[in-house]
Image (cartoon, rainbow, N blue to C red; front, side, top):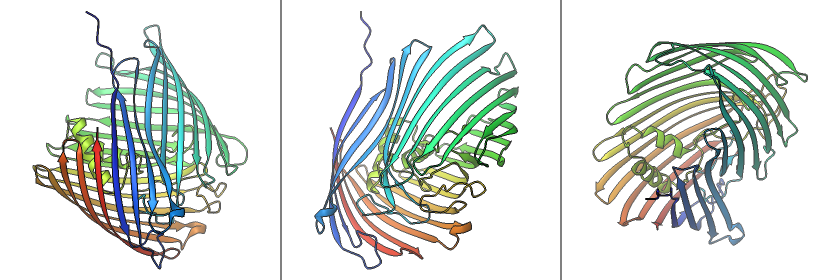
Length: 481
């Protein structure tokens, strides 16, 4: 009998969304408008075989009742693919994304894609990464990888092009061999439309020691060279320590600290899963956009909730459906960025702390997320925030709470509250804004793969440059085929 060929899973969909808002332009005066959004969607997925990946794409036509000149099309894309070109040896990874992202961290943005927000741009990213895997006798594994990436931001100077190469040699620690080692060589060159360009190179050797199967220690040292802190290229020594501890099957502790060219870099991750809940805390301080960190990776709201509910909703299909319903009710998509995402135009120093908690009861679910972040340029040499001078920086903090309660087997009630504040530092000091958003929604499963939701929203923005208030009611009808 012939083997079954792996099949693509294809799922088209269509949603119709009507928004009645009191302030479509987010101005102090306010302007009432009705916005009709029609969104054809496709999802494509394949999890087995030599070609694997997924594609989530939608295009939304937006029709404004009072101002047809504002009619527009918005695209949303999240896709990843991996092709095994030579069995177990040669791979090609590809990622692409289209989303709307904040131009400035210092200006409050819209809470809904239907609102006209000058602070958001459509951002497209593309990354191609071929890799070659092999072994050197029986003493080491080797991986050679190339990275080519491009970011295009509409009506923003944050376009960037990046190319890089990495070589990874490793003899990992295992149950039979407590001592392991690795050698990493990397090169990255980045160029921004604003005129900023950087080059970074690193050579790092690491020793790994497994005290027990649950506890692993690491120590690393090497050199890195770049032109981030000066006009010319300088070389620096770097070293660091790390720890990974899995005290139980539901708990994880990861700590890394390094002495680098800009000072101390560190990352901390704490996680514990109960039967129906999960707690995660992360704290990182690092340069974004150099050879060590790669490009400035931004997580989506979908990523945060999907990971946070892994323990309480273990089935990935049910978990994806739950998160999709939450996003849909709040006017978000799978490519909507989590709070704190913004465009940069150079290598920046960023610190971010985040606490996330998810509780899943018999009929109710509670999601809580709190974050705090800082971003700044190095020594005032580069402007990393669009529209801000070199040396400027900003602080962010925020809190969001979401409660969902199942009223009947086919209906549920959601209550969501969020608060965020951004403030300028250094030369941007005095520029600040805060946003408070409250939403309540009712969701009904009409039939198999069809749903209806009704939502009411209140948003208040306090800002010394653009304060406003907005109220809205939203109706959304969605169908999966």
